[in-house]
Image (cartoon, rainbow, N blue to C red; front, side, top):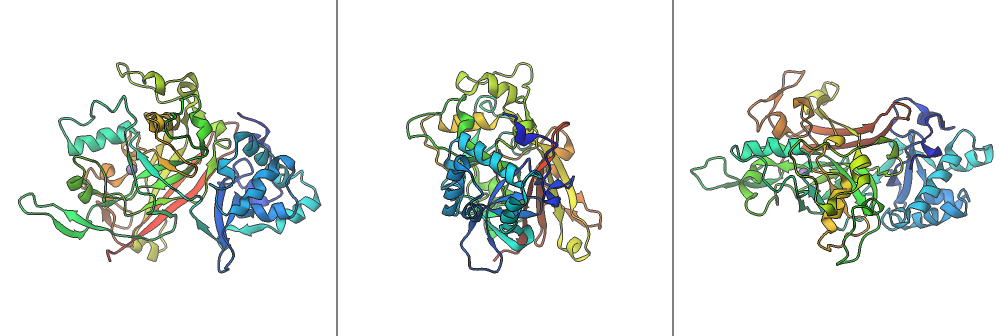
Length: 439
Ligand code: MN
């Protein structure tokens, strides 16, 4: 799957795409949906390159696409990824990527550059929208470190339930409250039963948290009643983004039994604007998580050679916090954690196959998320619940403030990137959100 579009020596005539620290070199080319800020234009399908967004349909109108990639470019007229690129087969997607690299690389002729330049919009002049109409959203729980930590807080004698090593655990989330990065998050109200001797109260959530997750979009779906084999799973995955599964822990603790997360989770989920394609991620594949000796092997329907050898992804995930005081003082956001997607117990292929294994039909544009990505190390814990051990070990911030959970005015900023010797670094952009007081 690694080809000439991953060549680390490829350079763009767009200088910002060659910067060492850019998330969007020519080897990445993630998709997004945007408008030019302060215009009444329709939303457009775009591709991020350096500090710019390329308007795909406008490029098609300038005749920049050849026959092979035309098919995707013209469908970009449909203003969202689920009605355009996500549905197309992987060969068309690959052809489109090759053509983008051609028109953006330093070998492009002056005429091509002129036409592309007309359709490049500086990233700070655009507003992003959800990249797809997300019909359904499912959140998994695939970090064994996260599951063990959380389990040991809520059920000290029985942290990891016996199904964990057999089933990629998940729950059906809520699609309607998925919001694009930058959307302000209003602190939810909910039932809190802090005093075990009194009835619960309906009050603003006190233990508001984030969860650092990776999302993946379903490209082609499957018919109702027709499972997806583990061998075919990745044919159904279009690309990845960052996800913040905002969580009200006090609400969660009271409501989660016996049916699992509900109002503690569905008030908001933020996602990053950029969808990094599976092809762009090819150089950063790693073997699936190595199971401890004595752990069961995945059941046959969740097991394949490819899944075991290349089903994981080496994606570094960082969470930063900037409080209102820090923002007012122009202080840099504070790094709370750094974890890696390769530490997940289950691969995204296994998650997708499991989801469809009972015949459940997945549809183009559906979003699935991995669950909090935590590692073994203390500073690799992907939520405050774990980092502060349910609030018992507050975090000290450089300006003297402390945090158990999120306060009003706090901004959570998530980043993701891939680095590997011999390849160009690529990134996911950011997923951010500021907490507003309860209404
Ligand atoms: Mn979650």
